[in-house]
Amino acid sequence: MAKICIVLATYNGKKYLQEMLDSLVRQTRAADMIIAVDDGSTDSTMSILEQNLDRLPMDIVHCPKNQGHRAAFSLGLEEARRRLSEDDYIALADQDDIWLPDKLETLENEIGDAALIYGDAEVIDGKGALTAPSWRALSNIDTHCSIRRQIAGINNVTGCLSLFRASLLPLVLPLSENVTVHDRWIAMYAQKNGGIKAISKIVAQYRIHGNNAVGGARQPPMSETLATQQKWIEEILCHRHDMHLNHNETRFAEKLLEITLRRQVEGFIPTVIPWVFANRNFLFLKDSAFKTLRRVLFTAIGLPLAKRFFGKD
Image (cartoon, rainbow, N blue to C red; front, side):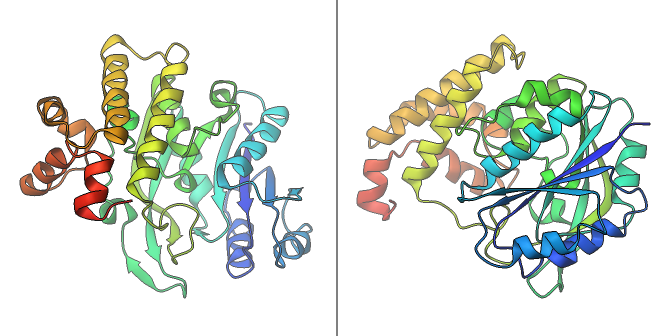
């Protein structure tokens, strides 16, 4: 029988962590192992983890210094890789969510031949009150997401709602610092190596409380967004062969990188508008025609002009 390993990342999570761990205890299909990576917490997170060692098959990896969300999951996945066979499964866990009791059972039973499966979630606030019945609907997530949309930064797989095959680990690891969103990276490899399956079933309560590492985090300044996008696309192009990107996908990435680089130094680039408009369904979330057109036109505006006239930084 295949094993399921949960990789849990924690950092100063004392407020919600016990609720999360309680939901893991209640799983109708219990995890075979849990690797909890604490990313240098300075509160009582470590104590909470240790107090639950007799309730869960959990090993704790403590990092003395905070390195960030991506690094914590990278470390946990590396540890999982050493312990699992390619027929086993991995579930990613955040410290502040609540899993429904049948989450692991449902995802394992429904995955079929896919490399990765993911469900939906209710959205709750910091007090546990329901704020939206569907994370997928709230975030306008399309269950069919092409590689080109993923290259553009549109991710339809929320890591904490997914289960994926351990056979993906040799492909996705190590997680480079340029991989800003680990679940998007995993999803890209899954799509090219077995496919992704989406189910509509609610499998968790996804908590957005204003201090999330992802999901509810602040919008970064334009300069940071462009720099991050540059690194992301460069990383993809470095891995285009083992990602099995075809010619059109590679050309799309190269063109998007060119535009991203130009927007960091040029004020106004009207020549990019035809390409952006032609590829608008890959570049932007589905929205009204008016909002989409605004986004298309804004891509012609570079950082120098945005700083001067729109107060962007």
